[in-house]
Length: 238
Image 1 (tube, helix red, strand yellow):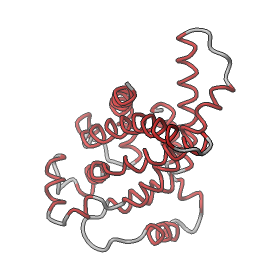
Image 2: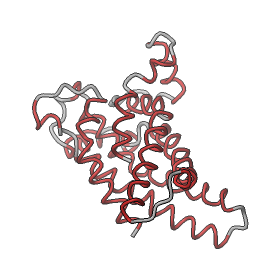
Image 3: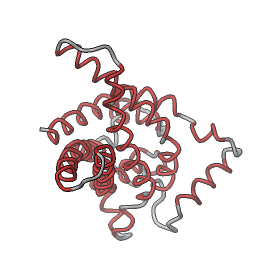
Image 4: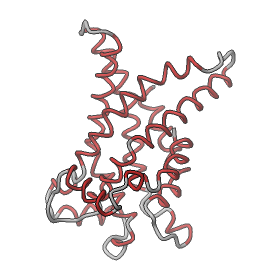
């Protein structure tokens, strides 16, 4: 049930918010077809990762709670981190999504299949360019999402009907998604810069971060450029 619900939620999420995601990548938009260019990789990646996120969290939680004697908070945090780490297996879809949304590569790729085919010539490692920031994002954000979801919901007015429960879930998810999206925004900036490159040196996360920071006049807030769009997208998504 958790896998299926996560899959369906992600499909709806991507289908509705994808145009906002395209603006985040500063894509030049030329009509509806261009607006939805590159939607297939996130549909495939996000539906699967959210299915894994919720499904594996429940499975890992049940497994660890039945075998480990650690406090429940620690056990569930470990389950969330494990689920987030497992999601990183699907990095190639996020990698191809970045390439398809970058207008600089429009002359190289026309569809998802072609992008995967071009990357194949560079070896398997090329599919996982940007893996480190994805790992730095997925594990901690999952821990915070699942760890804070309950306490936040408890602070909301008590729900006495199904519709009230749904409203509380939307508020809780939207708030968490917006805050976590803002918190990890610089990590995604580094990930996008790394994944926009095809071939060449595999630079470390810290090296790319410093490079972007220097390019943006050594101002921390410049690392959050575009975060307001991500904030609104995250509220709607989560």
